Length: 470
Image (tube, rainbow, N blue to C red; front, top):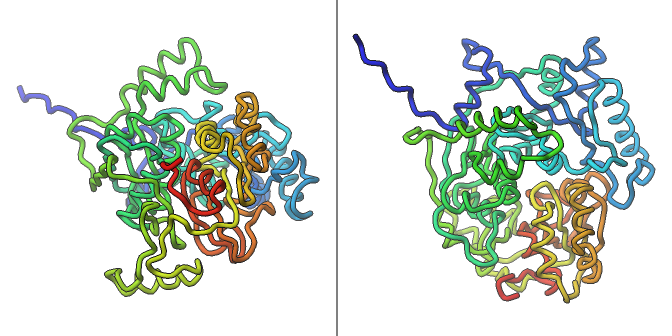
């Protein structure tokens, strides 16, 4: 009798993908079952398509609507929106949610916030799920061991109508972060160091799994930051294998399984981590011990160096394309080669975004600000109403106010700059968001990406500075 062959070792990504693959087309695309579809105000295109075709959402209980991109942060009604057109978008969103019988968290809900902050904190994001949203930073949700990625509005209409989606299976990449992070070094610094190493296109066509002792030691909120910025390296998504840290975070949240369902779910989740010996298409290794607090100098997240570094000379880059891009970036950023980042004057600070607006981010910033004063205009925008309430209960909001920061309501705010929260032309903004391309925070605005603690330090000093000195 022939001996049974042992099953092939599989990755976390492979296990979830295979479990959700309904069929595979001869072209190579897979039809995937989608567990969660997250909706925000930009979904009006998809809903208009459904109405035109006489369709309704097939499984509305698996769809969650959250207003975030256009919402005002100085008030909690559409009347406080930056313009009548934006107010109309917010109201249209509410109308579409009602029409589609979709559970949604409007401006006046305690569950409102940035979609990528609300979904994990509510237990909507769970290990082993497939999650989509018409926003590229949906990759954030992978921190809990899920396949999560952004889609366009035509794809969104397909998911709404069928609860499925055609997708090409990406390649896999494992990023192993060894060593131990030093004082003042955060997940934001790790992911900026990664993107600086592999480039803004370095993970194109891949699903990243983050692994290694540094990642295992991270909280879920730190892992959310890692996965959030995977897209800035052109990855399709980012993931971290679920472990006890994950399970402790999920348990008891509003939409998490309970009682016997919890026990069954937990048993399944424990089978998800990548098997020993599983093969990845690409392996990348970072030494966490060598990572310092990072800051960007150009108009791409890959333009990042330690705060102790200097603006590079475009002539030093290997390719003509990169030399041209670097020169163009420096012209826009009004920086000269060789300029020290530590000491570079800034005009404004923004703490917020789906990258860094969770309670741990606010605690880190407040710890730096305690007993100190900001010397430039600065705002804090919590990632959700629940985060805002918790920060107020812990006294963090008082610390921000006493330091001279504006304390706002939740929303995407200056990260997407779609709601009227913008930096002025020519202003240099130290920002905890995820993108720094031309005009991202307003026409002519110049953005330097960094961690919440680094942003707080910059607000005090009035210039970029090494938080480790504080």
